[in-house]
Structure formats: structure tokens, C-alpha cells
Image 1 (tube, rainbow, N blue to C red):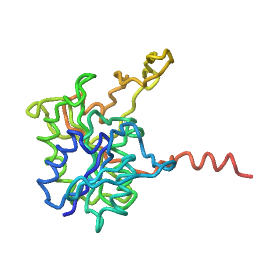
Image 2 (image 1 turned 90 degrees about the horizontal axis):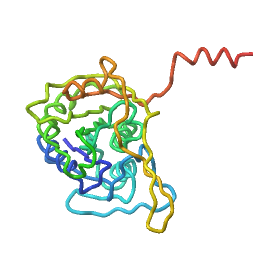
Image 3 (image 1 turned 90 degrees about the vertical axis):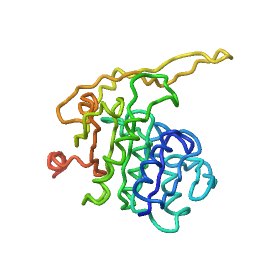
Image 4 (image 1 turned 180 degrees about the horizontal axis):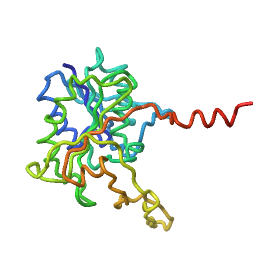
Length: 254
């Protein structure tokens, strides 16, 4: 089985090393193609206004001067001799829960894989407090990663779907199990923007990563993580709101 690994934290990120450990429990045919620098929050963006450069770091290891989406596209169209059987993205440093998936470069790399018709899975490790940097503990992801991936290897997934996995901020022995849940939603009205001044006296703004309010609706990824479970959420790429089609058709009729 050929596996492609990527992420949005950068090719040298600790979480990518954890993901490689997980992947090697299933195959030795591992390829890595990831951004050369951190691209958190890049979403499903492409680099269109400057050239993208590709650097080989070792056997089957490549870095791309672009986004996670760029990295997957480069891997599939330039780097790999044939498509992978599965694409794994992560392990992200931090949660990708609820509607955070719309911002996530980790999830977007899996989206690009799903668009290419390849089974794709995103992994994220929740952490307990801000400012941890590379000190985020990946113990839960390392211990539970293969357990949660194994059933997905040959599961009959629908086309244009992907799987989003989040590991709770707990020691491996404290994780209660795995839950398959739906996507939750945050209250972004309480998000923060931090203002400061640079050494020359000019104002700057930094989007904060402070805790965002959310309602723990039953059966969501937010609830599962809060309860101490690994959250497994199938996502689909069809954004159409089907129940509104008829209503709008009536509005435009005649």
C-alpha cells in the first residue's frame, strides 16, 4: 500500500514525524510532500501569484514552498510515479473541530486528496493550553493513531468524502475510546484580535487563538473531545443545501 503524508505545520513539524510512525505500521511505501514552512489557517488555498518550488530532502521526502493544497497537487502530479492508495494529513498541532475545518490546512490537504478520488484522512492533536509551541504532547495521537486508522483502510467510503480525526488532550491511557460523530459549530462572535505596535511604532493586528465559545450539542466532535474520546467525523465536499433549492426555485420562477 502506497501512502502519501502531508500537513500544514511544515515538513519538519513534530506531528508529521508522529504521522510517519503511524503510517509505517501499515506500509513501508511512504512518501512525504509537505509545506516547507508552517501554513496553519491556509485553508484550501492555492499559490497563484508566485512560483512554487520543490526541494527533495531525502528519499521520498519533499518540501514545497506553498500551501498544503499545493503540496498534495505537487505530489500527485510531479513527485510520485503513481497515485497513493491513501493520503494522511497531520498530525496537526491543535484541534480541527467544528467549523474550524473551513480554515484548516490539515483538513484542506485531505480535501484535495478526496477531490482527486483518493481515500484521505486528516489527523489533529488537541492540546490543553495556549503557548505550547512544539511542546504539544502527541501521546494520544501516537498511541491511538493506528487503532483509529485501521478500520478506515478498506472501509467503503463514498466518493468526495474524507475523514477528520481529532485526538483529545489526554494521556493515552486516559482516552476513553473512539466516537464517530458529526461536525459541531463554534460561536465565532467571541474570537479575538490582538493589537500591538511594532518597534517603529506602526500598529499591527494578530488573530488570536483564544478559546472560542461552543455549544456541546449531542453527537458532535466538540462533545466527543470534551468527553475524552477520539472524534472521527466523515465530511463531504458537496456544500449544496438541498432543502433550499425548491424555495429559491419558486422565488425565481416566472
